[in-house]
Amino acid sequence: MTRAEFKRRRSQLMRMMGKDAIAIIPTSPERLRNRDVHYPFRPDSDFYYMTGFDEPEAVAVLIPGRKTAEYILFCRQRDPEREQWDGRRAGQEGAIRDFDADDSFPIEDLDDILPRMLEQCERVYYAMGCDPDLDHRMSEWIAKVRSRSRSGIQGPFEFIAVDHYMHDMRLYKSRSEIATMRKAARISAAAHRQLMQRCRPGMQEYQLQADFEHACASKGATRQAYPAIVGGGNNACILHYIENNARLEEGDLVLVDAGCELDCYASDITRTFPVSGKFSEPQRLLYQLVLDAQHAAIDAVRPGNSWHAPHETAVKVLTRGLVKLGLLKGQPAQLVRKEAYSKFYMHKTGHWLGMDVHDVGDYKVDGEWRMLEPGMVLTIEPGLYIPEGMRGVAKKWQGIGIRIEDDVLVTKEGHDVLTSDAPKEVDEIEALMA
Ligand code: GLY
Ligand code: MN
Ligand code: MN
Image 1: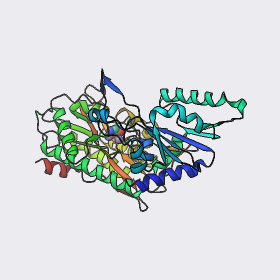
Image 2: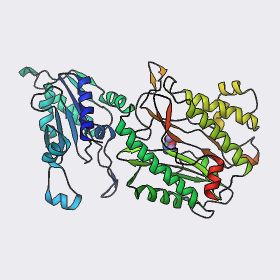
Image 3: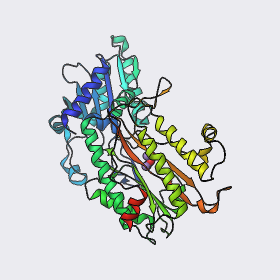
């Protein structure tokens, strides 16, 4: 992402805010993992979207129309001794020189400086409820401003959820965001392909996870967008299975839901394939049904269709197929209305995708499902899950969990599957694994 793009985003938000307003946008806090070890730091998505700044302990402040400085970045001071231990810091000079801040102050000065900025504004754009510590300080700053009301200082009287504005911006991906997401998608797709080639009965689930992460990291995608799910056989029926510590058995399927993150953009791919390279008959029948549902759902991704259209399409195809296979009994249309499929398919067909894997943006507008528009990216991920011991289901179907997930960009003409390099047709998978 270029500096010009971050600047455009700040300008866009400031235009929406108007004069006499202030936006306060913090990055994520660093979190302790155990004793004195932190989780690897990852900047807050909204903060990074606006700044491109990836150090912890930073707060961006936007004051549209302010003469001296509209964009102020609070961040850590340079400190040669700390930097020798913990790594480089931009400091105030770097914030201005490399990140286009109009002005920058040490993060320690926030409590002194911010109340003075607040007292000059009528409206405060701030995302309440994300960081309890900062929420608390915010109330203290406001109280400080109010305590001076007798000296004629009025201070802000309107509080607006800034996240709502940023999330609407983030829903529509720019050309360079799409380029980054395509790159992330390709890296993940190639890694999935590699797993199919490497998988053998007797391997452990975590070995596939390790292979996946290695394949991504060696292409520069050193972070995963979420913890990988690698579930062999019956484990694939646990939707968020992340133990990944069982042996992969001959004759089972394995479900791999894994995607790298690149420059803070996520990819999210699921592939399900036979551990030993060949689908059994019941596995193939169920797999082909999920694949048919996925193709149909992807076809429903186009401008003018609602967000919900792919899901409605997927459950129709799945229900008809489940009736055909004898797993559901009755009239398909009626079964869809009664959501009879939910016994085997209990999640939705997708979600927005972007800087966060379950990305921001409203799914409904004025109570109606949102219309798809060019630049939006979503996943299409139907599945079927039939755990061992499920009552009323023939034994041959049990212990099979299948999901097929791709990342789909809405284009003017329809859609573009960003993850199409990851094989998913039955013949393709069997040929690759042979
Ligand atoms: N990997 C999380 C999801 O598919 O939604
Ligand atoms: Mn997903
Ligand atoms: Mn996924």
